[in-house]
Image 1 (cartoon, rainbow over the protein chains, first blue to last red):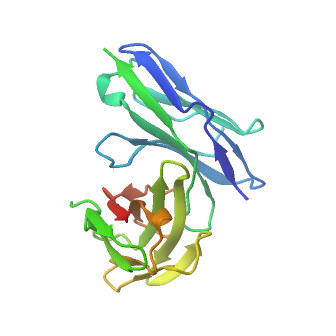
Image 2 (image 1 turned 30 degrees about the horizontal axis):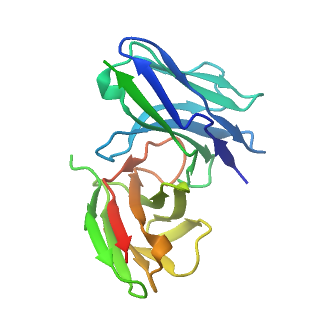
Image 3 (image 1 turned 90 degrees about the vertical axis):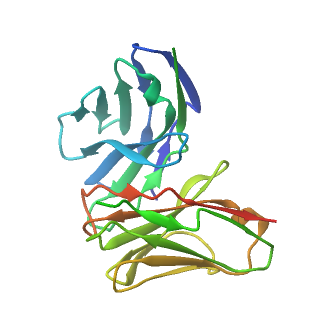
Length: 115
Length: 114
């Protein structure tokens, strides 16, 4: 079975500062995908960033980057230059390869950006 | 391009009743997945449909069922509602049936069981 753990239920960061959200997962799969999704108070889930397990290079999307440590089964999200619009619930998610679209989600981290 | 739409957005039902929720995926998307979101359990996978066939199923009782139509629209049914079924139900659609394709989520249906 796949499990995803987010150990930080709540976090806060000052505007313009950098924050890192942690995620660990457990799987016996070798090929899989990892994602970070953002759920603002309006409730629409939005993809932030994704990583393929076979790629050693960490994914980057503008102010968002990940630190993917496959051996440690760790997948943290770094948000640089935090903005008020980054305030949201962040979910880490895991998907096995070639088995269809079934996400295993962590319990989420509520991030508040303080002006 | 229109996003994923879910109807209704809010629903109040009584224990023992049944409910049907609808999800219209983005045009051209053939995969539709359903998730239950609760404060205590987080997001849990219910099932996925691809080309009218259920391809994956989560660990939910048989009271939860779904189907997908030829136009990729999907419905989810919950029979004999229980108080614990109160949750936000999210659906997500994807262009292809598997792999590294972004899943686009709808706004959800908030179901309250009294």
